Amino acid sequence: MDVLSDVIAGMRVGLPHSVRVAWHAPWGQRFPAMPGSAGFQVILQGSCWLLPDSGEPIQLHVGDVLFFPHGHGYVLADSPATEIADSHCGPDGEIELFASASAGGSGAVTVTLCGGYRLDQTLGHPILRDLPDLIHLPARLGEQRELRAAVDLLAAEIADPRLGADTIVASLLDTLLLYIMRAYLDFDVERCTVGRWAAALADPGISAALEAVHGDPARPWTVASLAELAGLSRAAFARRFATLVGQPPLGYLTWWRLATAARLLRSTDAPLSEVARRVGYGSEFAFANAFKRAHGVAPGRYRRESCPLTPALAE
Image (cartoon, rainbow, N blue to C red; front, side):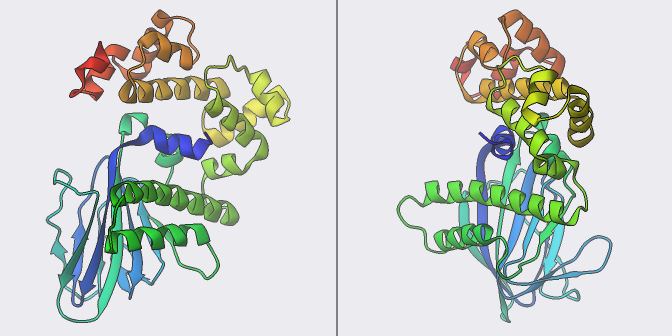
């Protein structure tokens, strides 16, 4: 599994959700903050305005994508002058996998596709933590063709659901998230605006080392063996890895092993000894001590608290 796929799979919990909304002018909607979630908006038809808490309004057009990786609230409206209504959808509301809706007055129509993903904040990867509160990917002819194709497929499936729609929509939402992240990382590297993680994934040597760690976390990696993969001297590799990733190579290896262990405890019924082996610990005792230092609770308790409705997993 590549690094970006691994990161998303490790943090995502539960099912994503999406809504296709036909807004009729005049309309203005405040979308509340959703802690522990990431959300998106795509403009499918017409245009509208993003009204930030500070700064100038931003006009959005067909194909524009907004991504809120930290679940911040925001406001959309047909015009900056329109009165804003509060949403009835809050963090604790019941949310469907997908739905269609219509809102607003009787004027010009803007169609949006919005959605969200629940994220396990205890497994927050720095690649997501380092992202800005808002990512705006403006539509440009010929750019991000895969992202546009995923949006079109998702919008069509929600507008006219048929057999298998639940599985197709869930898969397309995961695909869309990866395409948004890929488009942003490409966008970021090209313009060199931020992003040590964007730079890390674009760096052939550091990227090779990260792929190796994610592909086989149980292997007894050393700084020397990772440096060899990166094609760098041990000292140069350690310095460059720490600069781009934000921690030393073996520190990141340990962190990722224990994040992977948390995912396995939450999503499988593998015994603790098997989980320990799969993340590179020679004994269950050593694994339990390391896990408790990282997560604050023993592995067995973590599993019970993460899967309260499936007590058999905690046995």
